[in-house]
Length: 167
Image 1 (cartoon, rainbow, N blue to C red):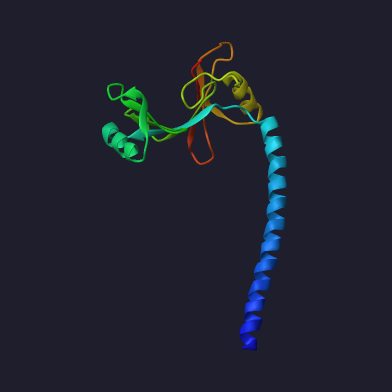
Image 2 (image 1 turned 180 degrees about the horizontal axis):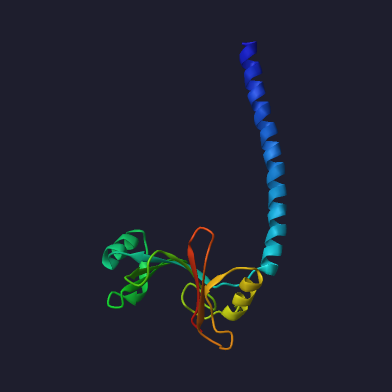
């Protein structure tokens, strides 16, 4: 009987100590994350709304699949061979026969509803920052122009990233 009592007491004590240390470390992590977040916000570029552009084999089949996941057609058409599908703030572009591979896409100046946002970084400013950071671009925006433009780069794992400003 005494042995069971000691085992139960040991388990409860271990739980209390573990809970205490977990709470202590969790508070430190939250504090550290607040500091990181402030720094990131100060130095962060505004890339705009994010979506993934998927190269699909059959547009209708892909549309049906993503509709079952709760996405609705937001833009594009079968006739144009592309659809932009939306689920809350998540965006997926489905493109048939337009490019190979999948592309991570950012749209400076837009929100997830393709509405203009007031405060955004122009693609040319983003491009300057990327180049000054030592990143190689595979296509560039003409720095002498204003308005719509795009640039592309590839991440270390071969993923293509498109920044496509429409305004």
